[in-house]
Length: 431
Image 1 (cartoon, rainbow, N blue to C red):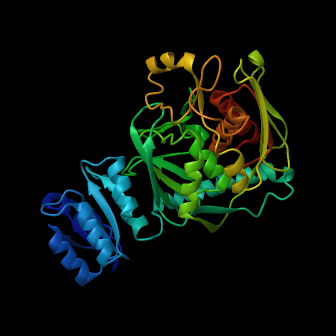
Image 2: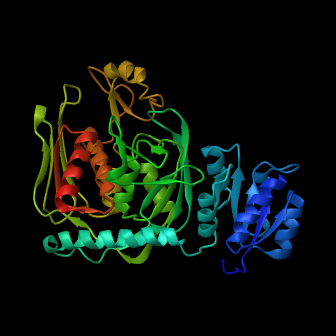
Image 3: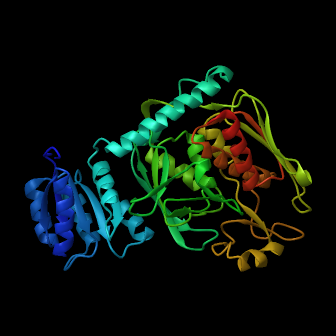
């Protein structure tokens, strides 16, 4: 039997069966729950009871949930509000979060998703299952550290990090064309980077084991979830050292302007919280290489830091470009690599459209090249194309779940080559 908690939770929904279902679930877990069927009653109870959490339906009679959310945050800003909707989408969730909602979940409610959200909103310890997952992650980290520490001069001393607060951003998927967005929530140590839909009733880890496809972008697949075009966002998390985060999205990470700059600004807006638990690098112990066919290859070798050297050769107007990036701190990434945008060739557009791969392509979110020139923008760097390839590599290389210390050298490679090299490293280093 669950221990009785003193926490007060108010469920606000005009449907009695919904209120009853939520009350039964939370009561079984030991929470004290009271109910309100309309906005006026909810505000009265909030003023009287001062709960720590309100579960609020977005579609309410007389006053809708969004307006009620504004009033709750005005009268009791310390109260966490979780919006609940059966007709929501990522933009509704983003709007609610911007107005101060702690989170947003969808009907029909799943037991696991509801309880996970309630626990996070109340700042409670992880469930038994979450603790077991964290314990397994810690043990795996320990095994991995034993395989790399001999090659490390100063590999210890890193700390896990999350964000100080939840933040949101919206945009459009490059390949799917859907309106999408990101809602980022801090997570406790040893959680890892987890992607989910709006309700977070199932998650897929940002890990090599869950890579679903690598055609024109890297996607993750697992537990009923598919998340596309993760590489630019993961490059930012890699460079800022974020180890624990819940990332809610709708099918595909928004492309923004084709670069990673907006994601850098989003992380800086949230602020970074250093956690007590240690985090170790994967220190490359010897050279690893894949490729060599058609002049394409990617390799990594021991080095004092993480870095990427990329060489590409295309016909004019791109020509031969080369750039070497040495990771020093988030600022160096933000200045040198994050602004570099994705690019495409005009002659390939029709084929990609037929394949349904650039439904969200716009003149504002990619560099478009014809046989003679860049036709839609001015380049941000002379070697912007090579820098963007480095951005992709930095993102893909975070799919081992920890930062890597080693120097990557690549020539004319893409996501499939990056993932192939990571699988080689994982296998040989027993990660």
